[in-house]
Each structure stands twice: as structure tokens, then as C-alpha cells.
Length: 335
Image 1 (cartoon, helix red, strand yellow):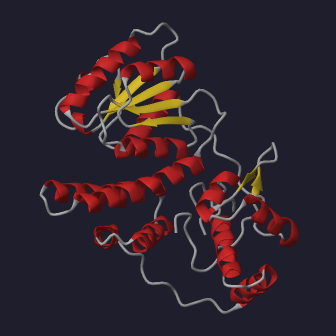
Image 2: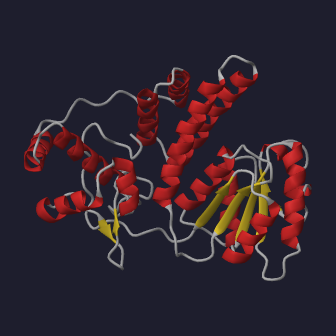
Image 3: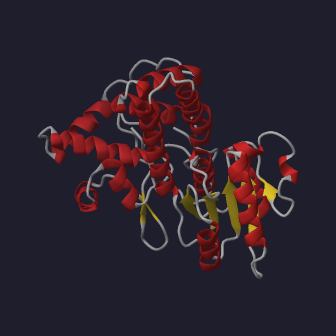
């Protein structure tokens, strides 16, 4: 159990409330009226409440909802499932678990399962990683390296297009699920993120959006290959505090520079402009666009730079009144 020195759940821990009702429905497949009825009748799950009354659920709440749903699919009533759960909690604790697997071990397993087009196996590996390590570490030390390895093998002709697309789509779906779960609408002017015109490689920028949302910044993610005129219209409509642009090749870096020039010509108040991507990994990236800020070589560095540009990390969402315990066998919102 991750907790701070005063006993409150630690941000990022399994007990910390981060998921709104819509996100829980997406993660579990259980309709909102169903688990709200469980809450009214049986007192589970126990979501936190925002000042406006909206519910926020933790990873443990999501695990419990999924576990109860699975038991009902097996023909068990909710009351019986809860008695089973209480019996398991009252049982003697299991022996200490084996040492957590390293990222190298998880990478090898995830790579094997993705190349075998094994959806269930890949999701189990990803769920284990999120249960063991922080979100940013899993993204940077598991998901991104595995995608890079598969991409390199595809370029060498050692991996099929089908396998490369399968891996990219599965991991991208997971990242979008997390991004939606951490979304914080209505918290001020957003950070707007877009790939340069013609740029189809968006995983790196998606990670930046996820890390910023996880830290509490409101984000609007536009994705791959955004035309300059469309981006300018979005900027005028949303009035973001910061626009983050990404390019992975020399060609799309030139398109990014053109887009940056158009944004710099907007009347005041203009947003701050940041950029990054593989195109700037070599050479003097900071001098590539003197009117903008280079955000760094990876998503974590970019998120930290944005924190600095915008004046620190925003306030976290409130902790729950009383944390629930995790259901055995379900430790991640992505399992």
C-alpha cells in the first residue's frame, strides 16, 4: 500500500482516486448504474467525492468492480461474492511474493507476446508492470522501448506489417485509456498538443500528453498530422496556455517550423510554444526554433519542462475518505 507519512494515499498509488465514472465504465465494461447500485446496497466500492459530488475511483475500486462483475458472469450473486471476498481477506496472508520482475524481463515477455499477436498475454504483462512501477516508468522503460524494437525489426524486414500495427494499436489504446482516466476538464486554459503536418508518429507526443494529464494539467490532444490552418483555428478557439508540437523527421521538422511561424504571427495573447521529437535528437535542438522552447529528449523531460514553464505542478485531486483494499489478482486498471 502506497501512503504518505501522514497515512493519506500517495498520488499514483493503487488507493489514490483518479478515475471518473465514465473512465470506470470503459475500464471494466460494467454499466455505471450497476456499480452505483452495489455502492448503495452493499457499501462497495467506496469512491471519493469531489466538492461537487462527483465520484472518483481508485485502481483498487476498479479492480473490485471488475472482480465482482466476473463473479456475476460465473453465476454468483453479489452478496455471495462479497462473502467470498471477506473470507479471502480473513484468511492467513499468503507467503511473501517473489521479487518484482525487472523491466528487462517484462520487455522480453511483452515483445514475445506482441509478436505472437497475443492480446490477453500482452495485457497481463502490461497490467503487471503498472502494478509494480509508476506510470511514467512503465511508459518510458517498457512500452516505448518495446515499440521501438518492433519498429526497428519491421524496418529490417524481420517483423510483418500486421504485427507492427497490432503492437502499436494495442499500446496506443492503453495510453488513450489512461489519458482519458486522468483527464481534468474545466481546470483552466489547456495545453494543446499536436504533431506537425505530415507527421504520423504520435506515441511520443501521446506520452507527453499522458504525463501532463497525470500531473494535473488540462490537456487537449489533437494527435497525428495536424494541418497548420486547423491548428491555428484550434488555438484561436481554445486559447491554450501552451502549444506543444512534435516532429520525427527532417521533413516534418520543416513543417513544424512553418507552423510555429504562423502561430508566432497570431495577435496577443499568444500561447507559449514548445516542441520536441526525434527530429531534434541530434544537433542543437534549442537553436532550431529560437521563438519556441525545446522540451527535451523524452516525455518525462518534456513534462518537467512544461511544469517549469507554467509555474509548477497544479494541485492534485483530493484523497479518498477511506481507502479500500485491493481484490487479490487484480492490481492494475489496465489488467
